[in-house]
Length: 235
Image (cartoon, rainbow, N blue to C red; front, side, top):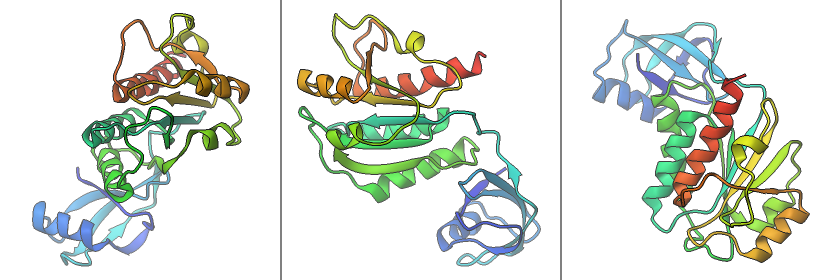
């Protein structure tokens, strides 16, 4: 069943945004009486029935919101440096959203090859991934900021920085604990500089490995998200 998205969704008579209305009517060919679902991206999913099939302002009757399945007793935050190839960053955002992440911080560091992004485009990628995976919660995306800014963010939980170094033997899988808020930093293609690692450690981040294989930035990000979700699902 099709899942639409509108942050203002509520029970009762509701009008969808023009973009969602056009997709339902022009692309999916939906008509009055057809059923679909809509999420507000804040944890609720509503069963809906089309009342007026207007391609600009579709009207539907929404039932009481039901809590989505994608709620967990911890917060997962990922900080990641945008990749030189923007398609790879979009791939990461899509897969991380499908697997399950709460917030994503984009940052620039010493070895960054991309320091600007297109937030509106990236937001659309995340929304599409949320809908495709039938989730009720939209991850929060923060646009590019300096890495040093992330070090100063208040965060109650465990903080890790993925770093490729022979001296780092502790893996994220063993260092992370279930049920704990977790913040993981993933560096750019050239990895973090040693000065950045030292600064991260002073800010409470623990260097960890994601395994023996050398991973691309976007793959490392997905591996980190998946690792934390699996650790919690095994409990």
